[in-house]
Image 1 (cartoon, rainbow, N blue to C red):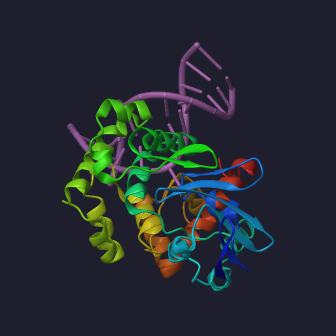
Image 2: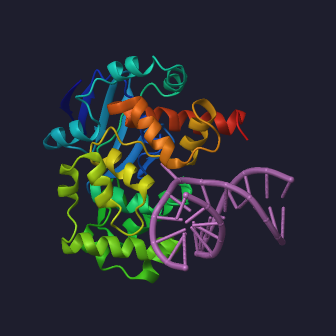
Length: 292
DNA sequence: CCTCAGGGCTCTC
DNA sequence: GAGAGCCCTGAG
């Protein structure tokens, strides 16, 4: 996989294990939207881009060659997902799960945006989360034009710290509005440094994140996995809970036990296996309902 | 350890 | 139309 310039942006040539739908719809991100032609539009680090695939080339329209390293990091291009999948396929459940989403890659997203987005995710639906994050960007971020339309960057900690509770509620934060405000303020003031938390090992980093309002074990694990490169994190949400209880564990096992079991079983690949399982669970349980 | 409420909206009945 | 449930956390 190598990145080159083309007339409207940059292109990643000869990708492997790279599918836009698998990547953008496996539950790790909220600001990528599919367009009618199958391409995806996202606002990444303040810049709107349109991404589409022809054969095995990924075109990123709106990006410049100066963003090469950024997108290499963002799409985790240096990692051999084929090798990871090969290893995980020794587990029969994962073997089946991987078949449903061969092209998943774990994105390295902006830490602050992910912190706030996953605070909003608690007891919420993906459609609502996306809408709320979009509203927050519109209200508190900055306007950027692209393809003759206006897009909005996700606000910085300083921008979001200025928000008031009513504004956040208008965005659709609901009872999470005070958590969002409090966390944005603490980070804007520099009382908590996400960069420093990223330097810690997974367990210490999770503990630090849980000091912030609105962050419990599940949300902390999502932040670690989707923005801090902690690939041994294993977020346990309702879907993972259902699929783990169905295939591996008793139906009454606690969330904490599921997390411990998975991190033991999958080790440094726990995060990758979580993504395959999440996508599989959502697709399969919904359609076939293999558990009540 | 436990239970419970908590935006707002969608899906189910 | 009511009621459950949602990528869950904080308070009791």
